[in-house]
Length: 247
Length: 274
Image (cartoon, rainbow over all chains, first blue to last red; front, side, top):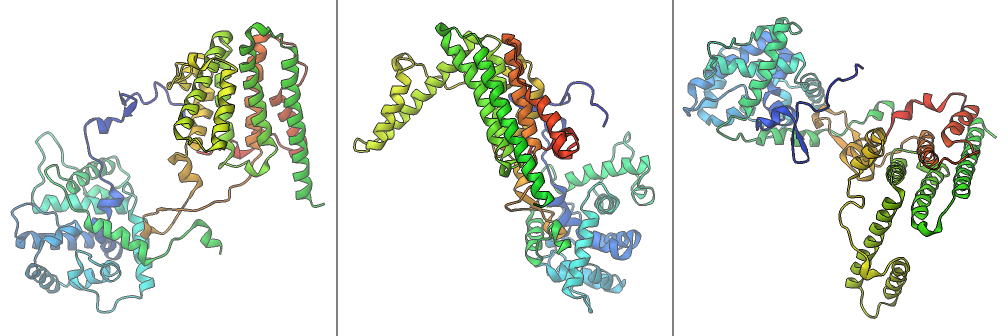
């Protein structure tokens, strides 16, 4: 390893006996990708895993646009986040289901989201219903475990695509503005050229955006589903220890 | 006898010899040190610290069941502390040894006061204990003259003492990580008392468990290094002709005879328990 030059913690500010890192000096509140954001967007991870990125995003876009059209509130709602669907009433949910059925998206969503719909209670998108022929519990556990493992790293492509979709949905359903001197990130590159400079730059913008989308400056978001998702996960399957493989 | 038992036997014999060597090294120094009884406290404080260093290393060397990341760092932390204290006192022995002793007496006075507030008249055992402790305190200094200092005994914290005594490396790379173990901090607990669960549904959480960790003689090697440093600091200050081999050199040379590879090549050597 190359030897680090210069004063240690040089970019930190000393306040009393504490060294405050640069980002905390700006008064930013920490939002946990794993704890808080991930359970809100894992449904898109399941969809992408089964259908591929392009079809997956097309379905999310369809649902978000329909939901925006029929929502009751004037306030912007990002329908890429699972909890947003709790803001819709029963009639509105029925309308969405009908629209999805008309476009043949419903069975795809039902099959993709089956692990969340069938294994978890109070999943905000459970109104979509289970698939006609769902897999065994073991198979669904395997699917969701693989999906979590694939998407839980917010810097890797599967996790990045889910996050980029949050920004994309905000963009196409209204409420995303850039000043003239800021070039919007090229979200396509996150799918088509993830390792390129442009892809990395877009990914960095997306990560920062998703944090603020989850925790808007003016309000506080409920973490009810996020909390429930992780707490239920602990109950539906047992721990796996490094030595279990050898037994 | 199996090879494993033979290895264990030779390792324990090696540790016995190591203990004898450091006792010999300590006793030779004490014997050759020209003591001026008028300033006896200086000699008592420095000699006592040197003895403490040897005692801790011996206790570790003779207990293979604690050569692990759970317990050994507790002793090593104490040893780094002994060395920093000793090295700092050696920069101005008379004044600093006095400060060191007075602080200790003040702490004892405070403890006795606490005991007195709790003791009840009929509790003979407690009253006897208070009496014994008071008599120990008064044998050294009248208690009405004994100040109680609730700050740092040296007026400096350990980092500052280490810096003055040219022990910054020891402070940063040994005292600090070992302190994490001594104070049961997260950087130790998360590695030694929790097991990672690999179930993605469980957010890759950690499960508390009582874990077996491997035994590693490297901890004794490190304690030998600290005894060595303390002997060296003492020798440099008092310029005594010492014939007993230094603990570090002896350890390195002798260990290879029973282990075939040098102790420094042991990959576990970087484990600080944190």
